[in-house]
Each structure stands twice: as C-alpha cells, then as structure tokens.
Image 1 (cartoon, rainbow, N blue to C red):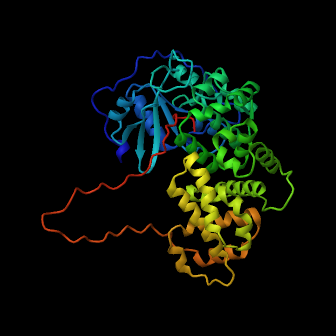
Image 2 (image 1 turned 135 degrees about the horizontal axis):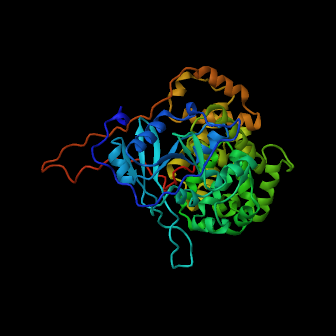
Image 3 (image 1 turned 60 degrees about the horizontal axis):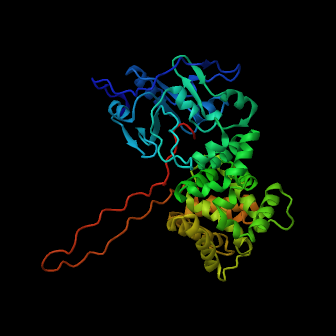
Length: 467
C-alpha cells in the first residue's frame, strides 16, 4: 500500500513556530472519543508524522463530530511539518492550493487533508481586512486561534487520547452555541464565506448563534459579494448536500445572506422584500395556498432532499440540486403534465439566475433534462421499459421523482413502478464520444491534436479541519 512505504532517510522540515505546552482537556464523561471510531488511514498519517519528529493532531470537524458522537464525513490533520515535508514523507500525496497551501494524502479514492500549523495573517495597510493569503506558519495554539469557530478549533492527540482545546470549544459544544474565535465582525470581514459556513454548522448541528456572532452576521452579510462566485456557489452546493438544506436556507434568509448570495434567484419569487417575507413564512409553515405554491414547494423539496441525504448518504449531483431549486417555478405544470412551453419556461428561469450566480451550463442542462424527464416518467399509459434505465441521467431523474413524491405526494404509483422495474439494473456509464474519422489529405494533417478537457475545479480552497 502506498501509505506504508519506508520513511525517507532525511528528516523533513518543520517550520520555526514555537510550540507552547499543550492544554489538554479530558473528554467529558460519557462522550469520550473511541479510537475505534477514527479512520485507520488518518491514524496512520498522524503516527508517521509523529515518528518523523513532527507534531500532529486530528483537527476541526472530525474532532467536533466525534465528541458529539456523530460520524465524521472526513478526517483532517494539522501538523508542524511544512507542505513540502509532508510531500517528501508521503509518496502518495500532493500539494494543493495557493491562497491556502496544504497536502492531500491519498488512500485509493480517500483523501486525508493535512495542513501545516498557521498563525493569523498580519493585517495589511489597506482598510479592507479581507484575507488574500494564508500561508504564515505558527504553533498549534496559533493554529487554533486563527480558525473560524470555537467548535472547529479542537485538536485530538492520538497518543494521550485527549482533546486539546485552546478556545473553549468544548464549552460551546456543550452549550450548543456557534461562536467565532475572536471578534466576529473582523472574522467575517477577513473571509465572508465564513458566514455561509456559520449557517451550515448551525443548521446541521441544531445550534444557536451566540449574541455577538449573530449581530455580526446581520451587519457583515453584504460583504459576501467580495468573494468569488465559484467559491460561494461551492458553499451553496455543500449546504444543499448537508442534510440540513431546509434549515440552512431559512437561516440565510433570516440573517440577510440570501439576497446577496442568491439575489437573482430570490427575484424569481417576486419583488425582493416581499419574496423574502413569503419564503420565511413558507419556511415557518404559515403561508396560505396549496403545496404547489412556489415558496411552499421549495421548502417541501428541500425537506425531501434532506431526508434523502440522511437515508442514503448519497452524493447528490448538481443537476438534481438544480432541479430542486427550479421545480417550484413550474410546479403546477409538472403536477398536471402540461408540456406547452415548459422547456422555454425552464430555460428562461435558469438563464436569468445562472449567468449572475455562476451556475455551470452543463449542470443547468442536466437540471433541465431532469425536469423534462419528470413528466415522461409519469405520463399515463406510457409503457415502462427496463431499458430506459440504461439511459444517461435516468438515475438522477428517478432521484428527483422520489423527492417530488416525498414533497408533494403526486406520482407515487409511477415511482414505485419504475423502482420495481429497474431494481437490480446497473447504472449506465456515460457513453464515450465517437469521432468521425477524417479523410487524410495530401501534405499531412493540419494543426496539432487537442488535449482532453480536464475536470472542472471548484474555484475555491477550503481550510483543512473546518468541514
């Protein structure tokens, strides 16, 4: 296995940050972290770093979730080793990032994100505190204090089996509070995406905001426009996949983030102020009208999406997420089977939002195809063929149909029929593109060959340990 190769003979670099005595805190009674719950490959990385003379800890979200007896979705590591030292120590690794440089250690398809202890960047002479570089090495305590929220500033020492807490994160976990480390207003101005992350954690964990943190959210919310579209959109996708999308959207509306993050989408519901009030009423369940009213249908679909993610732990693709977001505007057409101008209506909504928010054309097209397939799947009298399951995007269309049935109740017989028919049918792989063979001309071929297009990046860089 790549992760068990011999250590190199040279001793890798460790940055010069001084390390103070650790303030280790015993886990609270009844909530001790069991070593058996920790990913063995993450333990392997930590122990190799320790053996090589570095400090190394599990950090952030995995420690938080283990303390709360939740299953971590990934395991991150913080260490005194520099990214270059990590790369030399693990041949199954690579260095990524510019704004925030770290190492990915690979075990098959699994990634153990490993970052170097950092200190808070020195403030620039400019008035804007926005962080544009974050590669200043520090100590483990520096690393804890530069993180976003107290509940993410926890380290776990695998040797002593103790939690290292410099920021009173355990106190806030016990109190179920979201609190920034340091001045909340400054922390949100340094990196406005932290506001979306605050919403995500509060929604996922069922936590409340500490008073000063909440006040800063309300004040600094407009600053989210300073962040790149790609980075903000990636956080929105994470919200939708988190299993707490419904509550996340409600919180974004409450704190004033929604109109700055998804302004064009909000305007699809009407005049912004009235649309926001209507969506908040729908989230609270106080709106009038039937279940196909757009605001009510949105939150019904988000709730269905949360239940699906919680039950299947499946990584829902962007096309299905787009179908969830845009279905409320054509809900009555989908329910009635009306097809007149449906394609044009979907395209108009997606175009009005996608160009401003930065939705990829490929994802928008997939969402459009899923919505158009929805009616074909439920068409009365249509003969259902098992071969349909071999078509591209069929699985995604069936996932959305399940969400629709859960949210609205309409179409259950059709869903069950398709599920029964396709049970055990393998998911289709995308068909390779076939190229027409060109006739060779005298004098040789023109031009050079094109390299295949690589996978798109997410446009953002996440801080290790803060998932």
